[in-house]
Length: 88
Image (cartoon, rainbow, N blue to C red):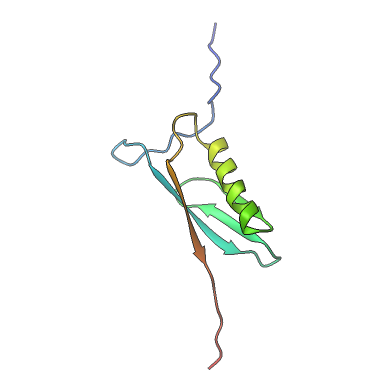
């Protein structure tokens, strides 16, 4: 009989040396159609929202869903990218 694994398919992010990752970074950009997008660097996590407050909550939920229990990073860093076009 097989034991069920509630964390099957969930990630445990580690450094190349096998150490657990303590921080995950998301690149946050304004979406062309409005709102914001957040894409994790080094993990397959993407989320979007209409407001920054909602995006922050969505990022927390996405990280909690992505990682196996006890393997989530201790810190989530949001790196905001803002493009500005200047005319000469």
